[in-house]
Length: 145
Length: 145
Image (cartoon, rainbow over all chains, first blue to last red; front, top):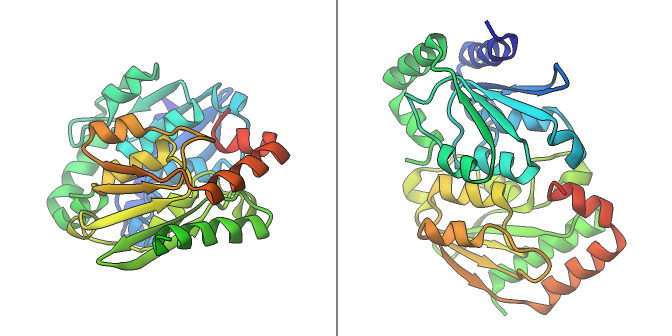
């Protein structure tokens, strides 16, 4: 299995074990993980630290050139906020664990020239399916619904 | 002067006094400020806490219904990330201090039905003009350029 998607899944599972929303993400540069994170809504009371944002935050301050050599991995299709961060920093490629549970702003990302790969990974799908079934109110809050 | 835009400007000036990027924002609900913030790139080494994100974070966890009754004030036209947060949470109205120094994703916001008011406020314009002149590298980093 892709070790970077696996690392994102491990982040999602860590979030779940903390009582949080099981979405994980890693930022990869030159074959190495430079930032990893998971959704922190429950853990930190955060409305902005979706998994992708947490990974970007944990990667620290980087140059535009650096971001343009990165791939962002995420277990779930990125919402408008996280997609906006990808566009802001000019990240050229996003690998998405699955988009069956939630379809983010994939079309908008494509329109900005971002290359997307959707893996439809069964482990990612299972994590979200179970979480959404058990926590519909929390999930709705996370996506502003 | 609009007291909410003034509060956003005060946040921007607070950020400048801290050695940071002078952009401020407040989230307003039912005639009251429920979250205020400013850009934290320098102060916290944050890549995600643009002013609007900081204001949203400081407003805490809210329901979708709450956000749909809010107005977000920001001293500068919102970048793709901050615009994405507005779309995610369904904030219906954004008041923008100015868009002469930087044009964000205003068209995309409009396409999502967000009502925008651009004030072209001289104080907002002056803050960014001076900052961009004195700190071009830091400003470029903040907008991924």
